[in-house]
Length: 462
Image (cartoon, rainbow, N blue to C red; front, side):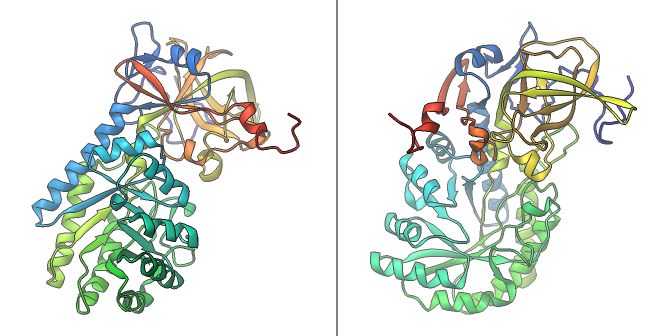
């Protein structure tokens, strides 16, 4: 069968429109003998009947394995070059108390970017010393709470924060470890909104101003300078950007050693994952090898000790673990320019549970989840139910042409920035998050109800 001319050039007609490419789906996703999608032994139909749709389904064993795997890879490779690594899970990707426990049990720390994320990590019982606090505009209350509970590191993002954190640490009678976020100017190969080290943007200190800021930090007895921090973007598929950022930071790192210890270098996160069958991200093992070689090589070139390296993966741990299940509502075959037909398949969620396609133009994959079919593949666009033409969940993929109302469809790799960026647009209630493990399912974040939505409206008569 030839490709539909409306399909993007990268999208080929699948040999099997029921197939579950391993790189895209969670490790424990499979088809049952009857053709139903199962995740960790739990069928899609049973999940939909019990929890409703949309529903985020998290493969718990997959999350734990990815967290442990990245810890092991970076431990091994940095031991090889005579150093060590600190791995922080980037909570902004998705954070709940259960996920916080999973990743810390796997040996990871957690990076939080707000008072709310800090509250979740603390509610999970995470030792505050294993937390790092990020943010370009931390409130005085957030800083005070973080210092008061003893967070292990605060990332300084501006000159004014030096004084704010120092004052809070003095009030609490402690020496607060801090990192200084540097805007290296390295442009990651990613969407403009995901590139976080461009010169003209809100994050970090310009490289040229960094030494003066470190001197200010060191002048405060209530602060301990841990090292420099860089984050060049998200959904990155190559290591060149990290290598260039490290090269620029190493020259500054060596200069700063002349004035005192600089025990760490934080290179951030942003490791990409596969959302479609053509995405080819680096494996975590390969990333660890390249990072260790980059850092060891930079240190050798400058004749300085290899620092402890910190990284902050989020998407690469939680992203592939999760599948969002939807129920199909209406279907329309739309003739485009009189040349070809695109099948619009509308589902009961949309940009309120996954805004990334609308916000970033992100691509996703889709499969029928309640059954298999041997019907010819048809080009589909999975549309949401919101009153926006840009409310698209999957821009282009092939499904069996007999997809029909009432079918369940599964969209994989929705663990990162799905629930975390969800909203109540059009007054849709946010879906539940359900963890599946060894044939059992349980809610880890309760879904909202209309009663929840109305409970905040003070004009409702009760």
